[in-house]
Image (cartoon, rainbow, N blue to C red; front, top):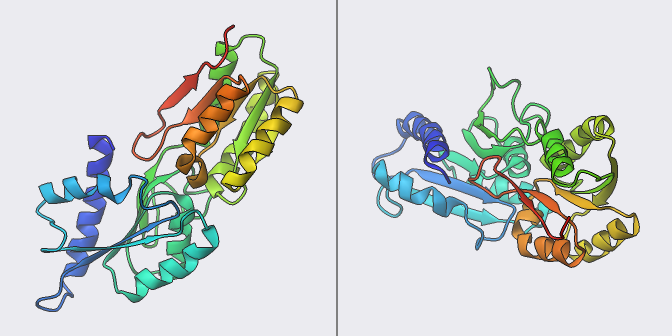
Length: 265
C-alpha cells in the first residue's frame, strides 16, 4: 500500500475511532472489524498495522482487530458482517466493494471504511463522491471509468488487435461495472469483446478455452477478489494460451496498469 493511500485510510479510521471512543467504558479496548472475501493469507489488514503503530495504535494494547474471512464464498459475507456488528466494533474496514456492501447492509451506524471501490456511486455505497452521506467513506480506484483505457493500451500494444476477451465476475459489483463500461470504448476502438464470465477458480480453465475458440487475441482482466486470489493461475493461463494481457494490480496499488506481453508481435 503506498504511503498516500495508507494515510488516507488511516485518517478516516482515526476520526471514526476518535468519535466512538468517547462512548467507551473505562478499561474497554476499541475494536476494528476487518471483513474480507479473500483468504487470510492475502495481504490486507497486514498493510494497515504498521501505519496504525505509527499513530500509537498497537494491537493487543490499545486496540483490538477482529478478522473475518469468507474464503471467496461471497454468500458468507452478510453473516460475517453481522457477526462483526454484534461484537460492537468501532469501525468496519473492508478491502473492496463487495465486502463494503455486506457491511452497509449490516449496519447504518458503525463507520465503514473501504480501501478500494471501482465505482462507489454506481454500486450503491455512497450517494455521491462529493457528499457520500451515511456511515461510509473510503477510496475509489475509478476502475470502471478507466475500463476503456485498458482496451486502448491493449490496442496500442497489439495494433492489429480485433478480438479481446474480458475476464469479469458477475458476483463482484466493481467487476460487473467494468465489463459494462467496456462496451462503448470497444466499439469506438473497433474491438469485438468476448465475455469470460467467471465466479470461481474452477471455471478459469474452461473460460480460457472458450476465449481461444472465439479467436480472442488479447485479455483484459477486471477487478474481483477471486481474481486477486488466483493471480498466478490467471497469468499462467494467459501465457499458456499466448494472450497479451492487461491486469488491475492488487490491493494497495491503486489503478496501476500492467500489460504483460505473452507472445511476440
